[in-house]
Image (cartoon, rainbow, N blue to C red; front, top):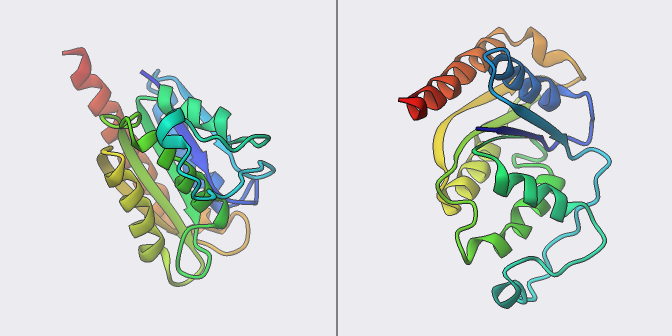
Length: 184
């Protein structure tokens, strides 16, 4: 059992990172292995629509960080994916990551796992960004365990969002409970 958390913020210690790590902290406190990846500082080129992945069963774009992240997604039992809200949607870095997983779709390489989606917005747009994450998860046939929409603009602001911070524990408990049913 392993939970992978991905923060799609370009701020390594920003609000998205804080909330994803808060969920992971509660999970690891219960003894479930977690891993955290920030997309800050990573290079993920956009999908170029070449369709070569249908034959190769893997994205053929070279020289970026996508393959390492994709391998971790494939080997995780549960994904916690978070994105800040940029113009009412996910960040460009998250969108590039999502688009490149098209290469994994042909053989349903992500299907059957569970997932949680997290978005952060300063004021509005978190619901729309959440729809993008949910569409990604649904397309890849993830089982959906819930979501959190946090509020914050400056790094650290989300800590003042008591609803989001308490939701992190609630979602983590749901994840721990899910893994507990696998042991039965």
